[in-house]
Image 1 (cartoon, rainbow, N blue to C red):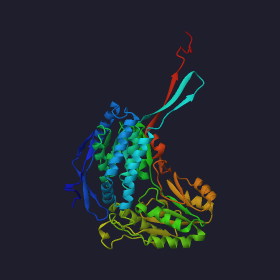
Image 2 (cartoon, one colour; image 1 turned 60 degrees about the vertical axis):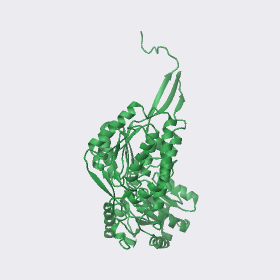
Image 3 (cartoon, rainbow, N blue to C red; image 1 turned 120 degrees about the vertical axis):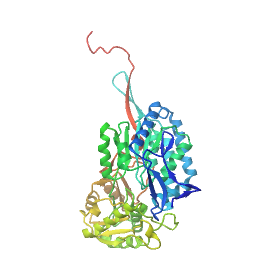
Image 4 (cartoon, helix red, strand yellow; image 1 turned 30 degrees about the horizontal axis):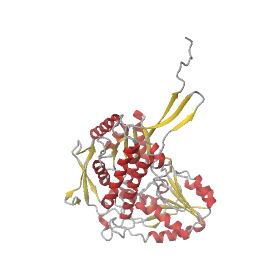
Length: 498
């Protein structure tokens, strides 16, 4: 069956130069509800030609100044209208996000609200003063201004279909750029609704363009196209490495938010129940499909048995089910492919000699057999060189490691190629600061986990990325910096003899 909204079948088309299009290939991709395997929509499949048309529309719109030359107040007004429309359609968007991605309604609802807030944040930010002036030795006025980059290619993942889109779209548009945007091929439903909102508020044609399709086709063309001035990507590290190479053709600016294998460090003096609660939240929120997930729990040896026992007790009580069930606490993973990947890693962990403390299997009882459900899983007796410790699984699977002292905790925390996030739980404020400063990660927490704010930057160290999202840093990613020197003494310089 195909999901129906009202009396209309949900058919998803591309949006290029202010028009809805079927695409050059005349092919469609079925979109699956991961909770029950049912087809919920059909999305057109984009081609290289479609991307080129979208880029051409974005280039024409940018060069015309129809958007970049609007005042900050005028651009802000469009962003505020988009935020209001998201709020008006909150319940609809929440339901669609749950059907498309699988996450529980309470998670999806938070994401939708945060997307509206992100538009409002950047609407306000661009009204603040930008630029600097400098006192220099000569009779000169030196200044710096910030200008839009041009045409920006935006590529987002499937774990936060609308919110991750807005993290890129809001600052890119706020800065005065035009965009060519690609949603994840398996979760294009709410992004399509966002472009319906852009059409409804009268965003000028060509400013925002959306091409759906496979990463190796649509995403690659966005990265290699010489008329794209910047590409911003969120996703896996291996794909980010490919985009980095592809983007080198015209030396376009890149911003990459990539994978993670983040440590959550639990000291013996932490508030015990708080640490357990956030350890569960850190890995099982979003079914573990969160780049910053606390997928490695590092526990001080003196409390390891007690902590693991309590963690497992709580994990076994998590209500797993379809996201539209109000009682559900953890939903399915997003697709059959992701289910296969997670189960493969669980098998690898057992073969490597790690021991399952809980979970480790697909859930099929009570009608869950039609969806992609994995029991909350935890491994103990792990070693640092195991694949399940070093590689990003992106599912509800956590590994426990133990440490004796601060130095060992820090060493273990930094012992992966990633550096996206990390947490520390202790009631000793000085120790918390000592440790968190030495964790090589861009997003960190003390006595909490997963809190994200539009006002603060989001970025990774090492192979977890280049550049930032959110905050003033996120806006700067979509701006060029120009130095202007204004001569206040207009007369010949006399450098060469007459």
